[in-house]
Amino acid sequence: MTAAVRAAERGAHVGIVDDNATCGGQIWRGAEEEHGPDAATWGSQLRNADIRKLFGMRAFQQPEAGVLLAEGSNDVCELHYTNLVMATGARERFLPFPGWTLPNVMGAGGLQAMVKSGLPIRGKRVVVAGTGPLLLAVTAYLRKQGAEIPILCEQTSWGSLARFSIGLALHPAKIAQGLQLKKELAGIPFVANSWPIAAHGGQVLESVTISRSGKTEVIRCDYLACGFHLVPNVELQSLLGCQMSGGYVQVDEFQRTSVKGVFCAGEPTGIGGVELALVEGQVAGLAAVGETKAAQRLFGERRKARRFARLLDRTFRLRSELSGLPSAETIVCRCEDVPYSRLQEHRSWRAAKLHTRCGMGPCQGRVCGPATQFLFQWNPDSVRPPVFPARVESLGRVGSD
Amino acid sequence: MPDSTSGAVTLSVNGSPVAVPSGATVAVAVAIAGEACRRSVSGEPRGPLCGMGICFECRVSINGTPHCRSCQVLCAPGMDVRTDG
Image (cartoon, rainbow over all chains, first blue to last red; front, side):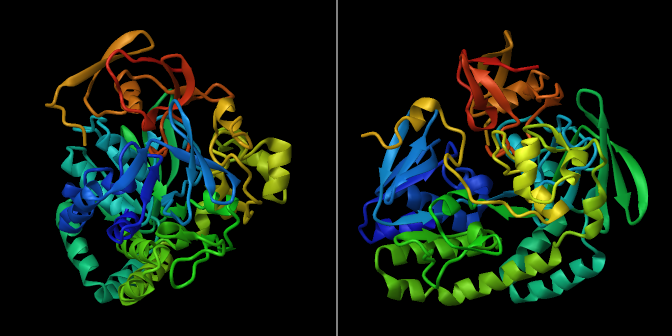
C-alpha cells in the first residue's frame, strides 16, 4: 500500500494485486478510518492515487521472469512488471493440541476477521489464548463488539512480559497504544504462563482445558481464539527464487531481494508490525522508481521499527512445553488428517510428505508446516508452483500465449 | 465492518434461506446457518480457522463451483451455498 502510493506519486505506472476483497491487509481490511489518522491518510492516498487495483486476485505462478499469473474467482490474468514489490504479510502460527480441529476453534486474528466480516459475537463467550500482541488487540476488539472474555492466556512468562514493557520505553507510539489497550482490557483476567491443552465438544466447541501457571482448569466457551504469534508468508518469494535467511526474505538496505527488480516489505522480511511494514513499503516503493535519496531519508525510522521487531521476537518465543501438547491421535495436518503418531515415524518434512501426505492438501503446508517446524524442527523444502491451488484452465495459461 | 443497519442480503445455505448483513462473507452465512463448512477426509466437521484465505478449512460450493474459500467471498443475493456436512 505505502509502496504503491510512494511509487505512484513519482509518476510510475503502478498496479496493486491483492488476494483480499479490499486493500489494507488483514488488520485494516479497507476500513482505514477506524484505525487512526495515519491509517486513514494512507487509505485516502491510495484511493486517490492513479493506481490500477486488482482485488480478489492471487498470484500463483511465474511463467517467466517479469510475469506473474494471478487467479480471481472467474478469471486469470497475466501481470507484466519491471519492478515488483512483494508485501505478502504474515499468517498466524497454529499449534496442534487435542480438539483443535473442532469448529469454533479459530485463530485469534481468524475470529477477529470473521467478526469484522459480520459474524455475530455479542454475548458469546470467547477464550483467547496463545502468544503475541495480537491476542491483546483481538481481545479488546471482541469485547468492544459485545463478547464476554472469561480469560486471556499468554504462554510467555511474567518476567518476559516485564522485560517487554521496559523495552517499550524506546517506542513511544507503542506505549500510547499499550496504555489504550490496558484501558480497553480492564477487568479481563490476563494470565501469563498459561496455554490451552485441549478443546472439547461433539460437533462444535463446548469448553477448553487450559494450563494456568501449572494447574489445569476447564472453561466453558462458544469460541476459542487461539494463535501463537505470526509466521511470514514467503511462498511466492521462494517461488521467484529470492534468497531466504532464517525463514525470512533477505533484503538489502533498499528492500531489494536477491532477484533483480524484486523488492520485499513488511512481515516477510521480519515480523515487526504495522509501523515497520509502512516504512519498509515506502522505502521499497521509492527505491523501485529510482528515488534512492528519498528512500535513504526513511532509514532512521526503519531502524527504530526494527528494534521493536527484535523485542517481539524475544518476548513471544514459544516455550518447549507446547511441543508436548499433541496426543498420538491429534491431527497435525488438517487437510489430509494426518495424526501426530504417524509423523513421529519420520525424520524430515520431505519423508513425512511422501509417506503420509502431510502438507500436501489445499493449504500446501501453510498450517502444518510451521507447526511441524516447531514440533520436529523440520524445515520445508523448496516451493513448487502453483503456490495456491488454481483451476485447471488457469494452469493451462502457463506457457501459452 | 459490515453495517447491520444497511440492509440484509438473503442467500441460501444448503437450501435454507439465511439473512446476513451486507458486506458479510459466505463463511459468516454458513456460521449463522449453524452448519460446518466441510467434512475432513476422515469425516470430522470443520469450520474456518484462519479467516484469511490461508487454511482452506472453510471450503464450500458456491453456485455450483466447488472448493470456494467462504471467508474470502462476499455474500450476494440469491447465492446458492452448499456445505459438505
